Image (cartoon, rainbow, N blue to C red; front, side, top):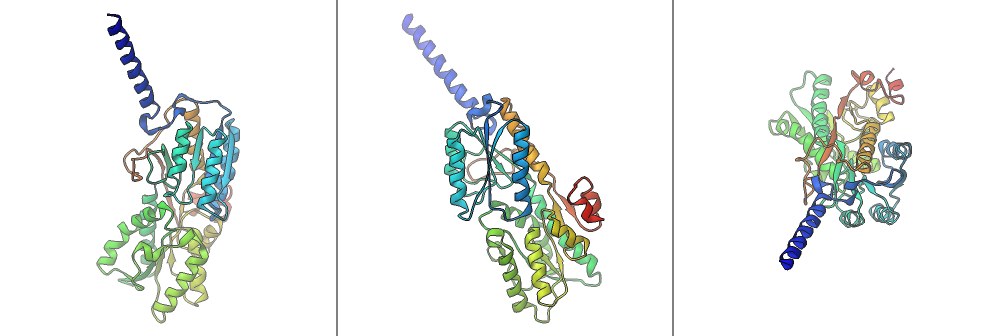
Length: 363
């Protein structure tokens, strides 16, 4: 009887241990922080290089927001070495005891080892704005709905050309996409092509260069110089006497580079899309050059990420509103998606009414 009783206890203990192990990874949290942690804990924030205004703004917002919430924020940007810098920075955050690591990836396909190291140390991993790929060790994803961003850009390109060229039955366009090491680039491009490809197939749109594959349209590093050089080449090769009606640009930085190229070639500025609501692009939109941007208020995105941290600190499961769309190759990552808003000259004042930086630019 004693042996049976001891065996029963052993089985029960093993079952309890197994259950506790499962609960630490319940709902995709994947970390021991499900039980909460100290209010003044270290929180790591690894951001990419400062290629656009929204990344610069995000860093300051994270520093201030985490401090106000009582946490010790460790906010770092990847330097000139890019991926290797970010890998080292994340490892340092883990070594220094970060309970949550928020990652805006330089290259979401090269951080699996760092995500695993974070989990092994008992930290939660939150992918910020860019999904981390091919690892089960990412717990949450917080971003704007990036496929919707692409759809809005594609529709804006069509709407802008129809308004600017009401007598035309077909339009000449060119396509640009973001950096191939950014997982969002394909999401943006695919979203836009959901809108544009049917019009390409029926002859409403003509990509004069013939460059429609994402590998042909990519802009390495999201660098404006690369976009401008490609636009220079496209204009010289395909637009001697041919009119260019529109350009799909994935963000504002590249949009301005594309416009610079077109103006430098002495050609009329076509309809050009964008994203990120950068101040210079808002000015350009109000001046009638760049046609559209996407309002993805970085303040709200950072706020949501910090809300997730607060929930984790209290031992609560963070809220998500999408648990089926973002398969990173190893798991479906629970996501909280914010809603993007298309902005043109017509609705800019309304879109930025509560933004102290951008609202004055719409007057």
